[in-house]
Length: 382
Ligand SMILES: [Zn+2]
Image 1 (tube, rainbow, N blue to C red):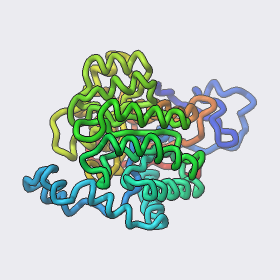
Image 2 (cartoon, rainbow, N blue to C red):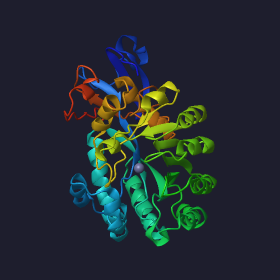
Image 3 (tube, rainbow, N blue to C red):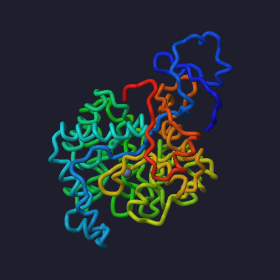
Image 4 (cartoon, helix red, strand yellow):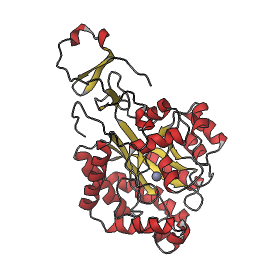
């Protein structure tokens, strides 16, 4: 991350054409129409590479019980937890899901997030996952900048309780091909929750290979609650990302670095669940990984639409420098989504430029809790 003093950014047709010191502006641009940045800092917009944007209902009811000592397992045993969200999602209409999604995207955009990865995964059956894709397709047609990830393997579906193997087979052999056939071009990625008690590494591999055959690049929910070898699986598959990674092994870190897998860390979830095991961001950076940060926005473990909280936790709990954390909210997540035109302000970038009225961008973290909002000098459509 470089800071350019007294800069100019040239924008042509919605793309950055030139960036540098204003004194070095090429003569062909002198005299172009200008937008005065008034001494604010111009930065690329944030890219959020891991959200569960669409779901029905919320889980505020169980939240207070959790604060007062009920465990996740107790709540789940009573039919609460993720299954409560699955029930609410299955009964929501496509229009309800899309309008909730639109409100959440607008909230993120106000705070400077210009591109979002968004997963299915609260349907857990073919028809409900299909309706989530329909809602995402609607949001894309409405102009929101989204990448969609198919996650029917978010949890073992209630219809397959106790038989993850049969659920994995249904996803790999029936659901993924049918979802891609019904909604061509909507999803670019495929994800599986590879975790003890959910899907095993072998079941995950089978689902991911089915997705790869359909053109869906893997993103892996890996090593979140314990070590399962999810990072190693992501490296073996050449995945776009491995996400969570609180219990990632040293071998997993080395294999992600060697395979160019982006580790996506979700510190808001660690905070919200009251866990003490922060992902080993420093060891990943030292191993040469291009670490990214994400919100993990979801109703159970991180109902948070605030990119500044994620940035701050990256610095304060994951021990990243400000420059590392800012790059992890812009360039690295864009790369993990194969979006070469986002997350930077070099020539060719989409002109999704934010202006921050600060003496230095570092203040975004330093003034802890301040609700800074960027300006959009080019009024780029979301
Ligand atoms: Zn997630």
